[in-house]
Structures are given as C-alpha cells and as structure tokens.
Length: 60
Image (tube, rainbow, N blue to C red; front, top):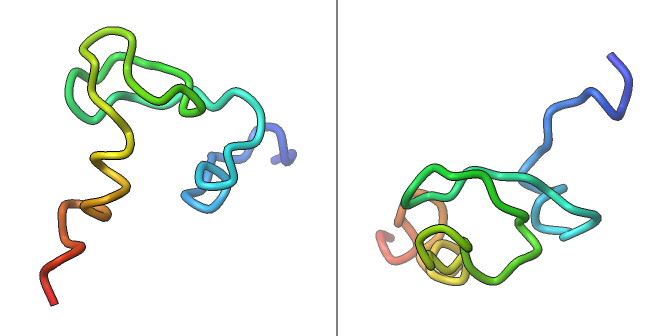
C-alpha cells in the first residue's frame, strides 16, 4: 500500500495539511477538514476539538 493509499490518521488530520475530506460529525456529509464548519449543516469542528474525541475531554 502506498503512502497515498494509506488511510488518514488522526495525527495527519490534526496537521491540516492539504485538503482532507472527512465526514461531518453531525450530518455525515463529506467536507474539507480545513474548513471551520460543515457547509451542509454548520457544525463547527472547534466544537469537536474542544470536547475531545467522543466528548470525553472533561471526563477525568
């Protein structure tokens, strides 16, 4: 499997390198991760980043 064919890792997504097509966490429509919000439903990726993966940021 070439590097181009490799699945995107969370680390690669956090680097915001190049257009990264991801599924929106609210509506599941694909959008560019470098955008601040999903153009389909308005979900803001900052909401997900602040809460941590699966909303577990404040669960310690």
